[in-house]
Image (cartoon, rainbow over all chains, first blue to last red; front, side, top):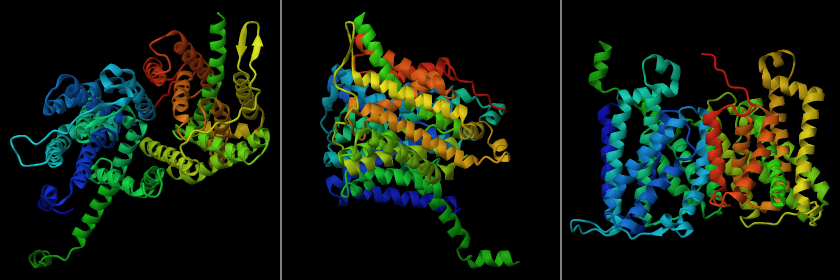
Amino acid sequence: MPPRAVRIGVVLVALAVALALPLTLSNFRLFQFTQVFIYAIALLGLNILTGYNGQISLGHGAFYAIGAYTTAIMIDQWNVSYGWTILVAGVLCLVVGFLFGIPALRLEGLYLALATFALALAVPQILKYFEHWTGGSQGIVLSKPSAPWGLKLNPDQWLYLMTLGVLVLLFVLAANLLRGRTGRAIVAIRDNPIAAEAMGVNTALYKSLAFGVSAAYTGIAGALSALVIAFVAPDAFNVFLSITFLTGIVIGGLASISGAIFGALFIQFIPNWAQDISKAAPWAIYGVFLIGFMYVMPRGIAGALRLAAAGWWRRRPEPPAAAARSRR
Amino acid sequence: MDILIQQVVSGLATGGIYGSVALALVMIYQATDVVNYAQGEMAMFSTYLAWTMLNAGVPYWLAFAATLVVSFVLGVAIERIVIRPVEGAPVLTIVIVCIGLLVILNSVAGWIYSYIQKPFPSPFPPKPIRVGNIYFGAHDIGALAVTLLVLAGLYVFFRFTTLGLAMRAAAQNPVSSRLCGIRVGWMLAIGWGLAALVGAVAGMMVAPIVFLDPNMMAGILIYAFASATLGGFTSPGGAVLGGLIVGVIENLAGTYVHFIGTELKLTVALALILIVLLVRPSGLFGRAAIHRV
C-alpha cells in the first residue's frame, strides 16, 4: 500500500483538475460532470448502506426522488431559497430513511431487497397521485439558479462548483464516519451481526443510523439534481434509477469511498456512448457488467486499482538508503 | 351483488396469474434459496417467443407447447451458465446477478422487438359467458382453468414421479441426496427450467389483458412477490392461494375503495408486502426460518 502522503497527493491532484475544468470545458460538458458529482454523492450514500453495512437496497431511487421533490416543491410553492432546500431535503431523507430502517431491521437479505424493490416500483405512482403538490405526470419546471455574491460565473459553472463543494464536504464527512468507531460498528454488523452484538454493538441503532445517513446522502443528491436539471417528473424516478445506482456501486467498488466516483463516471458516460448503438444497449451493457463484475472483479474498479497500486508499490526498486539498511 | 361476484371471478383470474408467477418464484427459492428477480422478465421473453411463432402462422396451441419446451430449455441454460458460478455466494452477489439478468432480458427484448405495445391473441372466444345476470369474460375463465391445470400437473409431477421425488430431496437435503446418487446440480437446473415454463404460461395468459411489451411484467412481478410473501416463501400451495387472495383484494379495492382506483395499485402491493413481512414474516403457510447460531 502506498503511504498516506501519496494517497493524499492523488486526491489533491484530482481536486485541482476538477477545479480547473470550468475554465476549459463547454457548458454541456460541465453539466455532465456536475451530474457525475451528483451520482457520486448518491452512490456513496447507497454504498454506506449496501457496501459497508450489508443491507441490500434496490429502492434508493425513492430517496433520490424525495430529495428532488422536496427541493422542487419548496422552490415552486413557497419560493424558498435553493440553498436551504438542499439542507431540508437532506434532513427529511435522514428522518424518512431512519424510520424506514426500523421495519427494515426485521428484514434480512432477500426480504429487505424485496421490500425496497417494491418501494422503487411504487414511487412513480405515488408521485403522480399527489398531483396537487407534484404537478402529476407533467412534473415541475424550475429555473437554474445564478451565481451569488456577484461572481462572474454562468449558472452551469456555478452549479458545477457548488456541487463539487457539497461533494467534497460529504466525502470528508463519510470518510470520518467510516474510519472511526461508528464505521467499525457498521462493518462489523455486515460481517458478523451476532459477534458484533456480543461485542456490545447496538445493532438496531447502527443499522437504522446507516439507513438514515445513506438516505440523507441520496436525498441531497436528488435535491442537487432537481436544481441542475431544473425539472422533476415522476417517470424519471422509476425502478431503473435504483438499478442504475446498484450498478454504479458494484462497478465502482462495494465498500469503497473512491469507488463512488468511478461508478458515477461509468453510469454517466457509458450509457451516452452506448445509446448510439441502440436505445436498449445501455441496459444490456449494465446487465453484462453487473454479472461480469460479480464473477471477476467483485470489489469493482476501486478494488482492482487498490490491488494494482499495492502490487506496484511492493515491486518498485528500493531507494539506495533503504536498500543499504536492509542489507545490514 | 352481481358486480361483487363478477369482480371476485375476474380477481381470481388475475390472481391465478399472480399465483403462477409466485409459484415459479417459490419453486426456485425452495430449491436454491434464490429469489429470482428475473422471473418476470423470463416470462416476458417467453411470451415474445410465442408471439414470434404466432406471427409466423403457427397454430395457437402448437405455438403454446413449443414455447413451453423452449422456455424450459432456456431456464435450464440460465441456471447452468449464469447462476451456477455464484451458487452459495453471499445474498448480495446473488441479488445483483439476478438484477443483471433482469436488465439483460428486458433490454434484449426491447432491442429485438422494440418497446411498442403489441396485441397478443387469446385462445378463448371473445364472447362473454353468461350465468344468470352475470357475465364472465371467457378469457378470465380460460386463464384460470389453464393455470389450475398447470398447478395440477406440477402437483402430480412432484408427488408421483421419481424425478419429482429426487428434486424435492435435493432441495431439502442436498448432501444426503448426493450421497444417494441424485445429481443435485441438475435437479436445480431442472427446477429453473420448470419455473421458466410456469412463467411462460403466466406470460401467455396475461399478455392478452395487459398487451405485450418489454415492461409488462414489472407490475405482475411485484404482485407475485406480494402473493409469495403472503402465502409464505416456503409453501408452493400457499403461494398460489396467496396469488388468488391478492388478485381478489386488488380487484375489490380498485372497485370499492375510491381513493385507490387504478392509480395506486402498485402501492397497495407495497403496503401488503410490508405489512406481511412485519406482522408474519414467514407468511400464512410458510415455516419460520430457524438459524443455528
